[in-house]
Each structure stands twice: as structure tokens, then as C-alpha cells.
Length: 312
Image 1 (cartoon, helix red, strand yellow):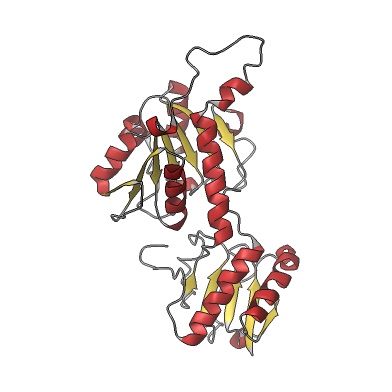
Image 2 (cartoon, one colour; image 1 turned 120 degrees about the horizontal axis):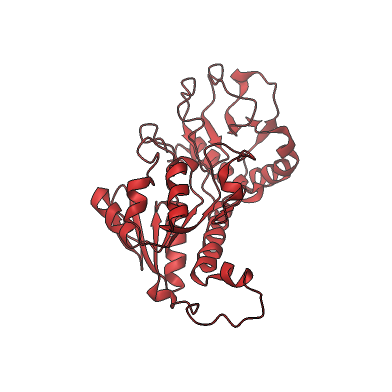
């Protein structure tokens, strides 16, 4: 029988316990799921959250893999004690949540819904507020991996003119795919609505700064459900004040929860959402964990194995 250690916050255990036990049973995997403290040498797999009790992996000498419950691994990938294989979470629930958050806020910007919500004043504000058709709106997504790619193809399916950018060249149906530094400049220059779904790496830190924000069309909108480090906060605030950027909807931040004194809270051109775009849901996450355990036990290639050198 395998031993799994649930190393997330204890308050999450009541939601994960039935989901994990059900999918492990369906998969025919004989396993016991334990909560800390346990004998580290007895643990075969760790179901892990960076906010959980395990920060030092040294004693887990027989652990075959660490299953991260988050899509992001920046809080653990640099941990020098982690020598076991690390798998990040990419599952149907995360994907659907991201698609729905992105699609909702793209349509909100595209249709200028905020204008009408703030102009319920008895006047007929028609002139200048008829939106273009989706096919005439340029939407750019930075980061077209599993989550960003799903958003890109969904928006293309709604008729938007979608461009995706990634470090390496990719191909997606209905999406213009660009890569490299010149591709980034080209993508930003046409981004009426910009969505950032990039990982947190040295290369992506402050990717949106004073120089790159100036490349965008005046009055562009930014949606960031990716990582807080992607944006130079001071540069974005300056671009909002100058009218270069019309609005920013931000779901992720360098410090979370976002401190009450942060300028984003009070800025009239900023919408803050509390890191909800791609929340891990126990039912769908449990299926990925069970499948990965099955793959490890069968000697097959695991899902979403992190490449340490790339940071994701």
C-alpha cells in the first residue's frame, strides 16, 4: 500500500479527503493518505502546497514525487532540499476557471460595460460607444501554454482577432502565434486587450514596464491572471494616469493578499480580484494526482513534470 502525505493547509483537508479517496479507489490505487506529522521515510508521494507544513524535503528519502496543488511552482522550484520530481497542477478545473475569468473580463472591456455601469444618468450615451465586432478587436495573450492556449482558442472561437506570444514558437488553430523578442514587440503593438498568462521566471519579471507599455496602442486594456511579477507596478500606474493604458484588471500581485495601502485599491482605472482566476478545485485536482501516481507506479511519463532549469 502506498503512503501519501497531504501537505497542504489543514483547513483544506475536509474538501480534499473525499475527492482523493474516491478517485484513488476508482483508479484501483491502494493508498493511505496521512496528515503531518509522519515518518518521512514512509512517504511515497507528497500532495503539496507552498502554504503547507512541509518546507524541508531532505528527510523524504523514499518519496517518488511531489505533486504541487498550484499551477505556479515559483515558491518551491528553487528549494534546494527538493530533489524529488516535482509536478505542477494543470487540470480541467484550473483551465475552465481561467477561461471563464479571461473571457468574462475580455467581453467586459470589449463591450465597454464599465462605461454604462457608471453612466446610469438618464442620458442616451450612444455616440462613440458602439463596440466593434469581435473580429475587429485585437486581443493578445502573452503565454500560450496549457492555460493561455485554452484561453486563446476560446477567444478565437468567439471571433476575436487573437495573437499569442510565447518564448518558443507554437501553433494554435485560429490564433496568430509569435515568439522571440521581435515577436513580443509585434504582439504588444497590436494589443488592444492584453492578457498575461506567463510563469514567474527571471525572464518574465517586469516584462510589462515603461518601455513595453509604451509599445501598446493608446487606451489599451490589460488583464493579468498570470503572475504579479510580470508587471512593473510603478510603470503601470504611470501609464494609467497618462491614459496610455485605459484600465487594468489584476488578479495576481507581488505581495498577496494585496496590502490595504497599495495604490491599486483606490485607483479608478484598476480592478482588483483576489487571485481567483485559476483556483485549484479538489475534485478535478484529485483526478490529476491519481493519474500521476498511476503513471509513476507504471514507469510512464508523468503529467506536467517541472523542468527545474526553466522554472516551470
